[in-house]
Length: 69
Image (cartoon, rainbow, N blue to C red; front, side, top):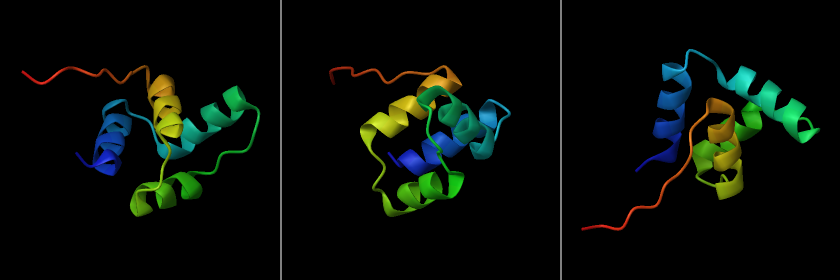
């Protein structure tokens, strides 16, 4: 699974932009979150799990762990 592709797809499906997501995250977290930083982390595959969870929260999604059958 490529997290970059998955997040970009979810953002597009929700009719929003990474810039808007970062603005909302900045408001919620009380610190400046820049889209370029997120983009670079996704490109380098260095994004933290917590950051992905925060982005998904803004998009109204969550991660669910399911045991393989």
